[in-house]
Length: 339
Image (cartoon, rainbow, N blue to C red; front, side, top):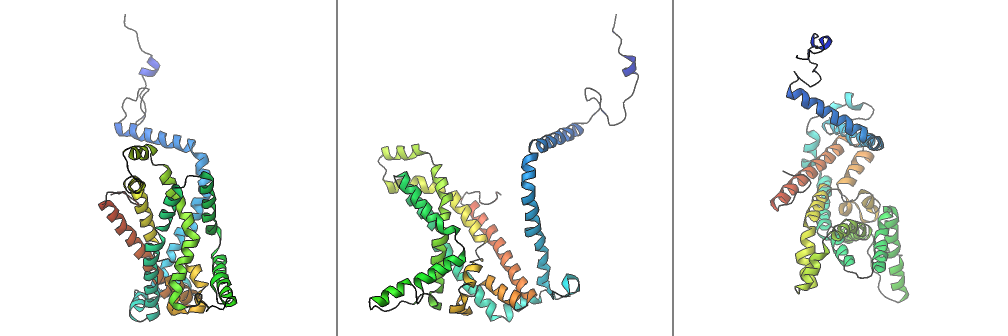
């Protein structure tokens, strides 16, 4: 005798859009949506502590990095602070045309910025890699840690202190010239000489930041499989051959990635460092885009023109990152983002 079903359930019809106990009547898309929602709720429940911890940083990033981007509208206005965005006159691209056609000071700042960018990219950027290779070759761990601490220390000093230290050492009344005078030797003028300003800026950057930059390269070197070095040594490879054929290829991807990021900020060559030392050498030798924006915008009151210059610098930085990233793809590296 066939078993009869429960008439209380079989005799009732479920509302439209609600599946039965076995999911009968639901479409595959409906099931996929439910599963995706369940997974999202599960991840939110699992990671709620991390989300709460990251929320203040996300809010700060939004308020202080993305919301101020709206201020780029000033580049297209004859902006007056007492009138604000809504009342200031819109002038279109007049501020941009003024930069290129009628402002030799801006062109001078642009040329100085490009020269410093090339110098710092060629001379400063590879220094952390060289230091990391030298430190990794040291046998004693105690000596290695001591040298690392010495190299890292200048990074934590402000530019005010760094500039003051260089003035105390290399200024006209500094320790170097005091020593030379005491021994009846001619003085060496370094601080305040326009022709040596770019070399001075570059040496300060190397002394302050090169040691800190070695951290990333040392971490990458430590991840290289040591068995590769042992196998190469067994095969008779010299230290130079192990460096060229094992270490440098392993660091190529990281080096290209850091170079791309460096190019993105290449037109920012150190506002605080340069503004502190502009007085003795003059604007012609020391003016860069960041200091030009400050001198003309904050001090001179040319808000629209200065904002236009800052916007141009940002657009050029984006283009450099995109171009360098495409070049990284040509060499088979991932870069900042993949294709």
